[in-house]
Image 1 (spheres, rainbow, N blue to C red):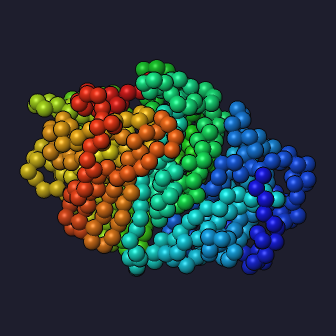
Image 2 (tube, rainbow, N blue to C red):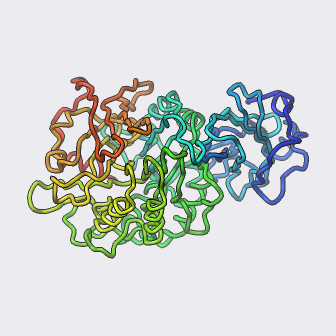
Length: 558
């Protein structure tokens, strides 16, 4: 049980606190009077802060802080062992890491209707500063988290340390990358989807068998999704990464169902009459478990997730949702030579989100316009002949949509366009083109792709220069099939990206190192390699990487 002296938690002044209400009424009129005995009388008998804390969506005046109460995180009913009643939660924001100088404090309500989650929107703080925060219920005190505000909109601030991650399959390996990421203490972390996976035990397996196992059935109900989120959130490495930095999150497919598209499940030929109720449950559980603002509260089967976060004048992050509004994949989910892929009527973003994004380009004054999104943006043709065989689940399946958005940032004269991507379980770096059929044409942007945190197991190293995809597609510049994350440093004159690698995730405690470094210079579209770590023969694949093996590793699902 985590305890803290009541005076040391509250002494510096709830009287002057800025209270951001989380519900119409408080669960208890005097939360400071709660004791272990009074809480036990209402069904709260053990430490409820088992899922850690998180912060997110920072702006120049504040951020969101999050927690979710759960005495028994893995309870099958998804309620976390909590009674069906609300609990008052006290929160404090500190100016120092030793939690001595309180700058904001207040109370919120953890209601059973929202899985006893707490989302507090803290505002009116000075810009471009670090803060720390924690929560309390009676004698129980949460871990301490670190947050920060963005620079003032008219200021560049210092260099921005930003990391981005994707694809954490709990069963395939340990979340060692999250632990190393926490130690980096970046200013900002972007999670680009597949935060969790929907499968039941031994459904999505790696060679040699999975390392850990999902509890419960395939996620279809609110109770299922809550339980699965709790299993992931209970992981200490994930908790450490959330506590270390504010996050910007967007989903991909596995937060609901593999390769879903709008109201269409992965396999429409297999009847799934409950798909819309499943979507509603997944969205609700996602909001309950993420540090999101109230603008993202789901309404039935809809949830506003695309949004814009400004980091002073240095960067604008356009966080996209390429699942909720897309047309169904034209020729199925895999690699195809598909006529529907070039249909100008088809969209991966939907018309409203596309218009919002193009408008954002036109009004941007940022040094860097960064698209945080899910699936591969650049063209990847896996056929050396005249046929164009591309992934229909990525932007290659929505060619006109990609061209309109690329043309949009060119027409708006965006200074530096950078696309960040997850999904494909491998590190990639790419130049972006307006016309990929003209390899001699100018580069108009840059794409950086993060490998998975754990999906696929350990993976293997290889020489990127020999990869067949890079030979067929000269705008592709790097490939690595190991686990890890990308750590960037964003300055006025350049963006530097270190492709971090954790060689082993099927055993805990692996080291981390930089496999390659790429730089994007101000007003020079495209990626430039500045460092490549020598190959380690002990980590190389037994056979040379082929097109077929690359596709299998990326797309193989149950």
